[in-house]
Length: 470
Image 1 (spheres, helix red, strand yellow):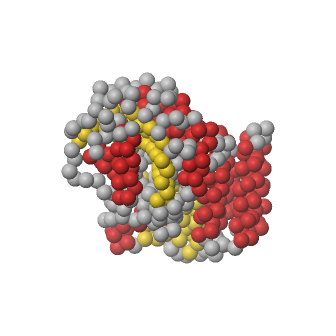
Image 2 (cartoon, one colour):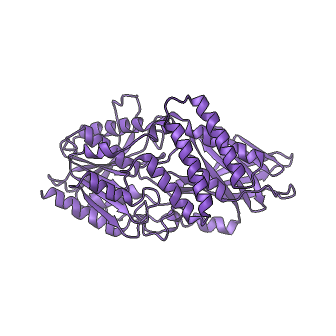
Image 3 (cartoon, helix red, strand yellow):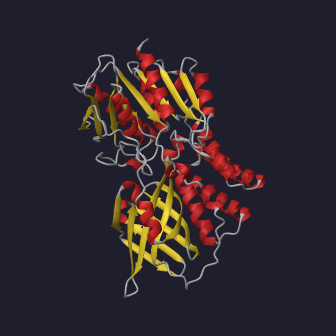
């Protein structure tokens, strides 16, 4: 998914927030939420407890990342309002009780902001959920070895940590493949909701004789740097640094390195290949080929249609987004002026589409204004990857899903137009993670046991073998 720092306003509105709350309802207990991330979603749990003196204690769990019982620095409960701050994680949550079992609010971490609904959970539900978090198919039989490396000579002084997977039997013609994650802070396995897509890819490809390097994004895992301060260009610099480093390793033939990117990572791979003609091939999994603004608008519309809202509502929301994006793209508008324009426009929109308190309207408008005014977004919204893809002269494999709601299937057609020589496959019934899906919504990712469709893996292995025969 392409939106790593964009608050999805429509998602906040779909909930139909109201202020019919009661101070008699206690917030004490465990509250579970599902964060909508750029690629999928992530479970988060807040454990709230009122202490004898009236103060509140809060502990945080992130089950899909395998961490729990993280203390927060501040927690405040006033009537039906909740405010949580975890300074060490640069995290903040503000919410209001909708009813006794639901809190509606907003989640902010670093430069990322989104709506987050919390639902009260009982112990039995939590135990069941924690017991079923891993759906990743990685073979137990490993005819390869893995070694950790830390990149050097990054122009910004950042060190990126990664794993090099080397088959026990190295075949001369087999290239090294570098895996590049999608948008949002991702570890080297691109781990999400118990799934580890890049671990699966590394395992399958190593079984077929390919050496694989996958790495933690800056600021994630063992990599240094700060992800939320990075621009798209910074992430391209990171990938280029990894490419140069991997080429220097003894186990790697520097003239035979391929790049595999997922989502935004595919665009990054294309950028590197367009600038470096020695890249052996590019593999795009759900990679954007239409202008990024169009990709965002299509993504939002697809999600809105799942909500079964009226055509009038859809049109008003799209009109709001179009106006904001027009302003954001206009480089003659200063950041301060842009922030005020967006905030006022969003508040007018909220007054027109539903019943919201002044606090709710102000909160949403302020968050959307802040996120839309970041240097990252003002750069991102202007990107059209067409010229980049056309400048790629190495072999290209494109993999897309017909039920992808994050990078829609029309991106496959666009890649065929831009690169007629590319081998592009649209797989029926698969989502953005290449899982068999019902609707394709990111909300389904954690409910699907398959990490990557075997059909996709088989096709990829066959197409790589075909490339090597040329």
